[in-house]
Length: 165
Image (cartoon, rainbow, N blue to C red):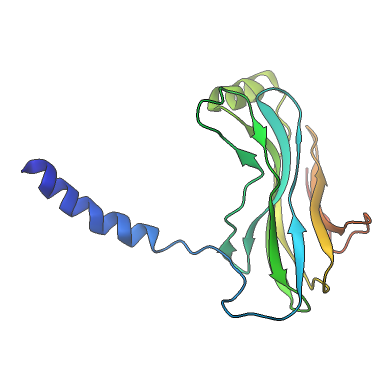
């Protein structure tokens, strides 16, 4: 009986908290032109990678991640393609994040303790994607300075560069 009472108390709390998070998606019924924004990630070791990604679009969390953890996959980091479709010809404010990602917390701690961790970088950029274009989040992660930006598939930067020293 106590389990049931506890469940009845926790369920409304969980529903309230989970309803506060909204994820970005192209507006329902939108039929206009679109563009694609891709995250980038590079595996730098068995349990570590560098990632440059969109974390929010117009203030809403992005529901994509360049890292996947498969059941029974062990402690290694697995990367997957991470991209999203956005309306074209409409200004977007994107929150970007770049830095190390780890398969396990212990690896992150070990990197910090040994001075191997690279600086993370984050910030907001605003730009207007063009119809049928593919953009990617790119950057450079370093121990002293890291930077992040959005570029066209040709490599031409289309946003300001955010740098953290």
